[in-house]
Length: 297
Image (cartoon, rainbow, N blue to C red; front, side, top):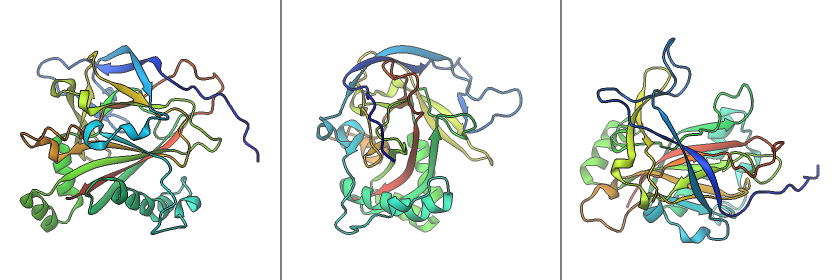
């Protein structure tokens, strides 16, 4: 079936992003991944919407790196010399088993090729987001960082065998948490609810608000909400296509080492946003993000 071309918004745009106010003293900031307990809000932080200038990286993809900006645009991820035929074409993104069996191997190869010094990858979960009624997860319309230093350490201990985790941490091996983000839009380039992200080189400690991230089943991680500051540099990648990939670095242990001025990545704020130029009848966004622990060098 032929795809009808549509006008995709391109270039810089000013759009509202939802930041957060810090909670009242003595109050724990909380976000429930799914439905909260009866009588509790899904998220207890006050929203602080602000107009933000968001630059388009289309045509400038090579200017940004994980170590400096905390994000990396990959166009395209194939062909792969070690795997000329990709399983991705056969993935059923409505089937969890198909995703882990057919898409996860591509993601692993992608990270090993594009994260400098990577020697080992452990994928630990994924989320599919669909902007349509009844979807389990929708695009997140507030600025956040997926991990903090505390939750990244918790992930290492949770997802590696106990002996491996102890050895990695004792050796001081570099570990990162990286999200691999792509659109699933069957109609072509992404138009509605694009993803915005700030260069981590412009994100300060005081911009991060720790939040308990509570999952069904009792697991509690930690994320960070984002306080607004005018000199944060925000970007998006206009009209992303299904063969393009965006790496978002949520944590980098190297950035915690004192005196290491070369690594400014490691915690990339991001948020879906409503582009005021989007057509009212634009196809709703569908996307998948796969989260990975990346080790080395």
